[in-house]
Image (cartoon, rainbow, N blue to C red; front, side, top):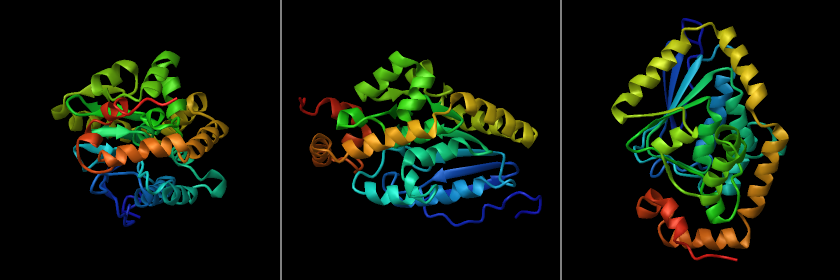
Length: 287
């Protein structure tokens, strides 16, 4: 505990750098070489969410990335079983999915703000969607749900959140095209709260966080809980999406298409990851 009674955030994380400033915690993801969501990131996130569930936790958390090109490009497709096992530690074997872990993020008493530079695709986008607010740099932020292009629907909350935020037609466009959305289009569709020039992003988010952090904790928690009750998917909906993803991601078509993407440089720093939406569109059509 710190001297003011707030949690000291002294836990050691392999992939998250934390900095506490009064009622606001900055949590920066740093998982080189690409910031993939793998077992190490999930293990750290489980531990951090446990800390943030405490009554003395900071009132506001700002999530960002140390990698200017990649917030979270997607999950580590070579370690699905491993990161799923880590996610299970947040809620038990019956809830062994990123979707249920991200639902825990949404239900934290703390207000969570994502500050997006670079690419957030797949479960990276779903992590941002589970946060309470999202602000993006106009010059470099990219969002995408590439799963259908690979061979499976999104499985960690993307369908649930995008349908609620974007409406049916735009959610179908985002999910079924597996395209990259720049910050301006994401803002127009409702995927992010605001897109602003990169030079203004830090000041904007810091100001919002400081303002919220100065308000009474009980009021923040009550207001967030009331909005969550209206807007969050149910556990059953999240579990159903996760089960379908975990089934199809191991299927023949997804396996073949993933293998082709790996040949082109998936999960390495290069053209395929930088322009994954384009790479998916160039894969051979399938029946």
